[in-house]
Length: 101
Image (cartoon, rainbow, N blue to C red; front, side, top):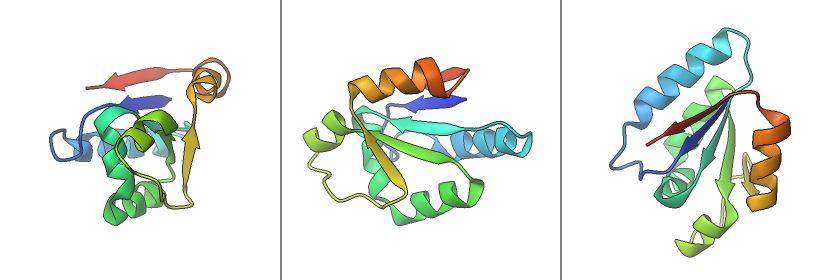
C-alpha cells in the first residue's frame, strides 16, 4: 500500500496515519508513505523519521515539493523521487493507493 500525504504535519493527524500503516505492516503488507506538498515538512522531523523507521515503513518525498519548501537535506532513510518515479511507485511497486488529506 502506498499512502500519499499532502498536509503539513502540524495540521494533519499523522499519528492516525502511522497507526493505520503499522497495523497494515503487522498483517504482512508492504507500506510506503509518499510525502507531497506541505507533508514534505514531516521528513525533516527526527521523531517522525524514527517512528516510521520503527514501524518498517518506506518513506518517499516528492523532489519538486521538497525543493519548493527549501528542504534539501534529508535523512538517508528518505527516498526522494521525481514525478516519473512516483508513477513507477503507483504502477509497479504498490498494489493499493490511499490518498490521506
